[in-house]
Length: 303
Image (cartoon, rainbow, N blue to C red; front, side, top):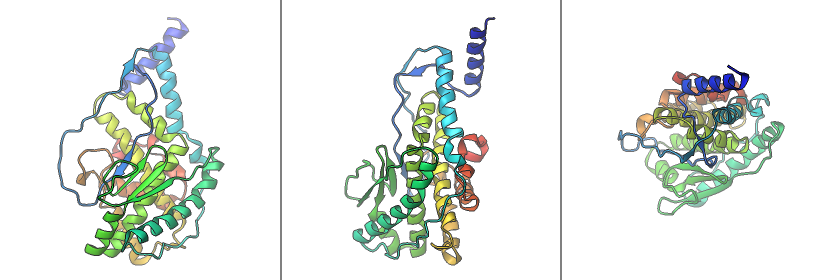
């Protein structure tokens, strides 16, 4: 067996073990749209459906090289080496979600604080920082992300937040829960923006295109979503003394992050409530993006 054949054979073994189809996409897929669900949606359990990408034949070694490159981006990203996240020194926005204007003001202030922290971190990691666009919409308005959900991040860099969801929750349910949900969700969607700026989301989308079956792509989605929640906890943990994240606010936040998960969704694409709580608290406690590397974590830890 010559050296080239040996490399190809080794690649086949590695890819087969990972459940990856040895065929190349015509193009890397664009960054996916990520959306969040309300805490208590209707419980349904349909079978997940995923559309297989168009594939063309390619040599095994070129596929192996492509996937190795994408693996390095998601698992060894320079973002993981920037050290502790600095505190924004921002307090929780004082405005309450009693109107669309107030919701817009809340998120505008919050995103400005997220920009303040993440800009130097992104640049330290060697990437170009571009602030996200903020879209505040109502439940009756078609959004820039083309979804009707509590929150979403769209390819192109838009964070979209549903003002109707926040206003109704604040009026009808626990007011402190509404505030902790708003704080978590906007920082989670910003986490997707961080993934986009550092190449993690596009690399993960390419990896997904080579995954076989239904379960493997869903697990990849959970790695992306749980990392975004870890980034959300990371920001709040760094700013805990100024926000502040303490007392009854912290207790309600802990309850909030432990009551979001696939148990209330339609498919296993975001992570269980147990995994969601664990990864969000891990970011909060650790203080560094390195703690949010879901791509080197075991399958059980991203269930």
